[in-house]
Image (cartoon, rainbow, N blue to C red):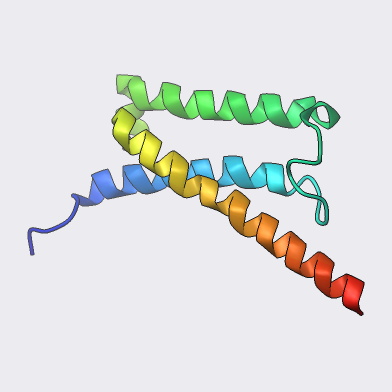
Length: 109
């Protein structure tokens, strides 16, 4: 029964993963049909600034002792950040495939 992560640590990692997923996915949502790479960031500076600010707030909360107690979160290692960043980046690939498949189906009908 002693396998895996402690519950609070697992919640901490899951929160980080969900925040990263949403930060990636918000850039996919700028267009339902066009690739995320075809929609320039300059079309929505507020979105890019908001994502950077909210990610910064999350990082800030991880490193402030008062926030540790309030939110039950702790700092995460660089290796964990890197792994979760790559996992969350998969949503870009999945959505790009989805958009291409949907576009191909609509062009065939």
